[in-house]
Structures are given as C-alpha cells and as structure tokens.
Image (cartoon, rainbow, N blue to C red; front, side, top):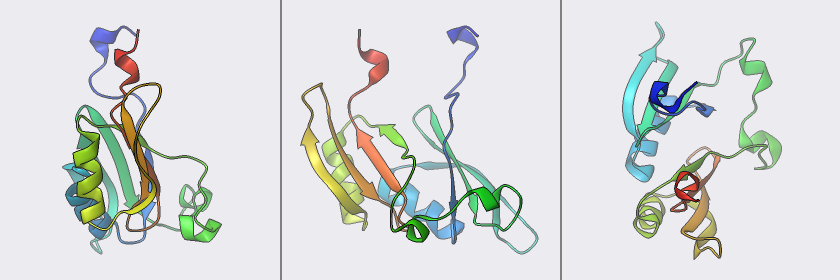
Length: 142
C-alpha cells in the first residue's frame, strides 16, 4: 500500500475499561484525546469508541465477558504489569506531562529529555493502563 492511500494510523491500540464512559472523559481531559465516535449498547455501556489524537486513533470499549474479552485482563489483575503500552507522539511533551499530572495521571517515569532526541514520560491512567508520551517522532528521523 502506498503512503497516499493511508488516511490516519494503520495500527490502532484497543483497550478495555470497566467504566468506559469515565475513561473516555478522563482520556480527553488528561491526555487531550478527542471523541471520534462512541457506540453504546441497550444498557448504555460502551460497546465501541474511537478517540483521536492528531492523526492517531485509540479504540476502546467496556470490559465484557465475551469471546474476545476473555483474552484481555485489566492491569490490576496482573499486579499492574502489562504486555504492551500505547506510545503517543506529542508536540509539547512538557505541557502534556503537566496536563496529565494535573488531572491525576499516576506518573511512572518522570518527564526527561532523551539522548536520542525529544523528551518523554510514562504514566498510568485512571484504571491503571500504562502509557508513554514523547516528543520524539520516528517518522521524522532520517
């Protein structure tokens, strides 16, 4: 596929939250995501949501006991360990760090300038998912 056929990201992280509505509101406020779409079931639980940040996207939904949901556990079920972590490129990493911290993000690795360029930090969201935010843009490296 050529670059001209790509619109947005082609790899989209997908997370599950016990309270997906609260997670959507918090991710928008603390991290700067924007709601793209939210689909609720008959009981009002989030079946599927899409949040955007720049040309990137995150998909999320309510924790469910279905075939796909049986493959996913929450961080508190694994002693706060994870097997993956969304990595988000931000323009002003220091300002992003301050915004996340002010909104209750649990900072795991403080903001720091990186030897390979840019700056970054890692944190946990309101349900314990691990995130990395940094200003290093691998698409801009020669």
